[in-house]
Image (cartoon, rainbow, N blue to C red; front, side):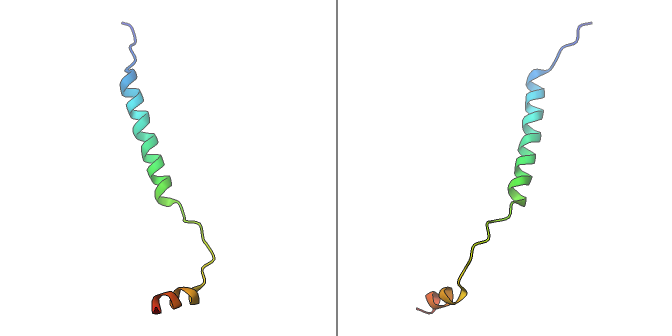
Length: 47
């Protein structure tokens, strides 16, 4: 018997795994911390 490869299924499995990894990476990313002037923000809201 010859060995046949299920190419489409292999591509699908790989794509599912890559998508899961990418989703985890997106969810665990931390936003860039920027210097924020709290007093300036408070002044904006009091207007």
